[in-house]
Image (cartoon, rainbow, N blue to C red; front, side):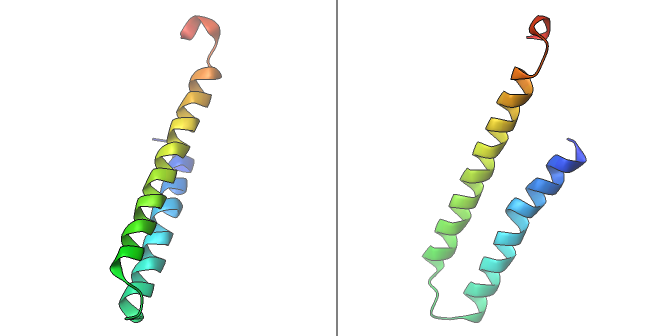
Length: 66
């Protein structure tokens, strides 16, 4: 994996997870279902981002490399 891709993954998965973990642990009024839903949304968005990145990479290949 390239370094920019790893940086994007770390930012996209790491920061929201840490922020949500701090919210859930510090405020007892926040339910765990909010945490679970937010993590699911983040994971799905990262998956979609990687799919789009891979499609773009394949589309940018020369025609004889497909």
